[in-house]
Every structure is written in C-alpha cells, then in structure tokens.
Amino acid sequence: MSLGKVNANTSASADRLNKLMRERLKPGADKKLIDERIWDLFGEEWAVMFTDLSGFSRGVEKFGIIHFLQTIYESERLLLPLIENFDGILLKVEGDSLLVIFRNVNKAVRCALEMQGVLKKYNETQSDEEKILLCVGIGFGRVLKIGDSDVFGAEVNAASKLGEDMARAYEILVTQAVVDKISPLPVGLEFEKIARPPAGARQAYRLIY
Image 1: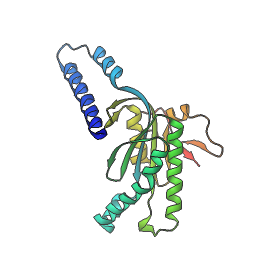
Image 2: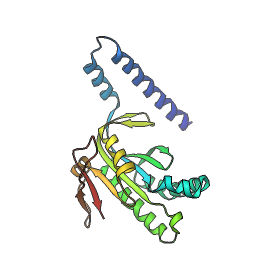
Image 3: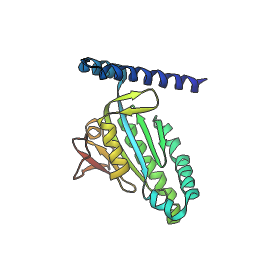
C-alpha cells in the first residue's frame, strides 16, 4: 500500500511539472510567473549526496559482470543501513552510483564519514580486486524535488560532478554551500579548498578527516 502511495505521489508531481513546462513553452508565456509557480510547488532545501566507486569500469573489464554485480551488492549491504541511520533518503541507484538526500547537512557529512570509515575497515581484510573504494560528493541548497524520484538544481549538478567525476577513492568533496551551512565542524576535521570547483558551485573543498 505504501509503495502505491509513493508511486502515485511521484506521478502526480511529474504530471504537474510536465503541465507547467508545456505552458512555459507556449508563445507569449509568462515564464517568470511559471518559474515562480514551479519553485513554489517543488522548491525544497536539501543536502544532496552522490557516491561512486573508484576504478569500477576498469574492474568490470578485468573481472567481468559477475564481479561487477557482487561489488554493487556488497557496497549496498554495507552502506544502505548507514544512510538510513543518518536519516538519508535514497532516491536513485544507477550502476555503482547512489543519489541520496538529507534534510540536515551535518547528517549528510557525518554519514559520508561513517561510510568511508566502514569501507576502510572492510577493505583491510580484502584483496585488491575485492576492495570497495568510495568517492563522495555533497552539495546543499534549494532544489526542485519531484516526488521521491529525482532532484534538480545547481547544487545537485555540482554534487554529481564532485562525487562521480572529481573525487578519488576515500575522498569526500563538498560545495561552498555545505561549508557555509555545516555547524559546528567536528574536532579533527577541516576543509581544504580544491583548485577548480565544478559548474554550479562558488567553490569546492576536500574534507580532511
């Protein structure tokens, strides 16, 4: 029953957005007014986390599809309970990548730290080909949240770039908005500015832990 409610909610949100986008495309449409309506309907403040597994594509080539599936299965077994513990909502799983949102930016960062800590301990007893090497990117700000299926916005794009393209194994990269919002930063942690922030972020940082 609850699954049906989620699907109905997502469908209703997507239908409403599609209708407004069709209106926006009409000649003479008041795009500013329509944009305000879209943000009023779907605009929410979230921390957005993207994760990726380092070296995953090369591993698939070398070890095959079964190894690919095993690594995904094992990473989800280890990480999904942590996401739940820190009140994250898993929106998407695409191959070896996760899209997770958090209402609380501190919990998003703490969750990322816990994920890396659990995997570091796990990897100590694994052979090189069995290790799970996690990359994390986190953004924060006002986004368009469409039901429980997707989010859109500059901070979403920046977090995706940080987690899936720029972060290396064991790294946690965050946008300026995360640094501005998080309080207080736990003792022993610090942010190190990275040279080239992704599009959509004023600046980006590596979390030193």
